Image (cartoon, rainbow, N blue to C red; front, side, top):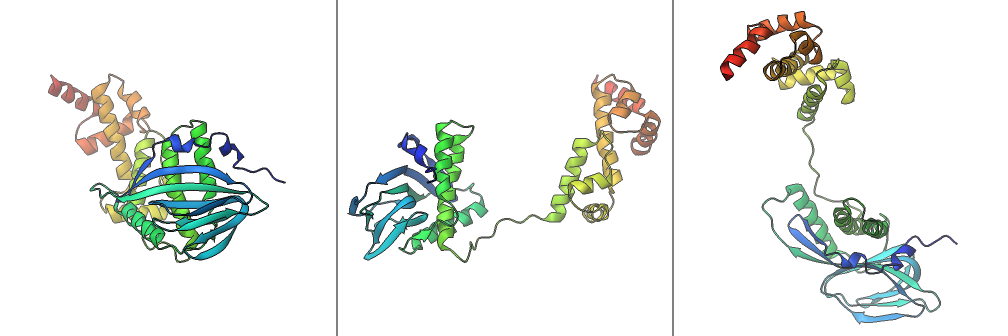
Length: 307
């Protein structure tokens, strides 16, 4: 018989409930009220009751029954069901076998925010509306929401870096995974899609700015974007028709050279090589062509200006 993976949660049964967890998600505030693993001994009955909040029930081991409204359903390992505010339900463990249950109780209240991400708002709204309409019938935990309980417990128990933030994300994940367990149509709210032309151009320029002092080529930048060098050339032409890859790289390097000329007394030969130019002679040629003076004259002019 394989070990029960959630056994560790019995060691500190109120560990997660000691945390004051409040989550802002879209235009909602989600407050965690209960977050634990409990065990029903054989034949244990929890008579008809309801809650003012949402209660997510998961069966990681054992079997039993649940009455939701006026219908009775069998429960077994790997199943879940949701009881929303005001939903009457009765639970009973099997007469000969105990039943474990992972429970998450959350209160979901509207909390409009001006600074909320519109995409997050759309997803949160759709998820909450679907939770409110889920059928009163158990389902299989197809998306393994139960694992979120164990991950949250282990993060909290070990005080892992960022555990509070991780737990908040796991609570949202449980809500989404429960929705998916009943939902064959997927979410209607579409995630934001990048403008790939702008994204690739900006990524290429950022990579060039981070690596200008080394041998940056059109080919290796294109490789980082997983596109051909010809595609990258077209991207630069579409975004800035008058600025080629080479022109932009040269501009980045010249800006770096100017900064070094102003802030240091290093030799022009040293600056040329450190900022990606082949040698001082080539730097002089580019400098005169682009700025109308030599690097030495630029340094002198800047120092006079600062005095």
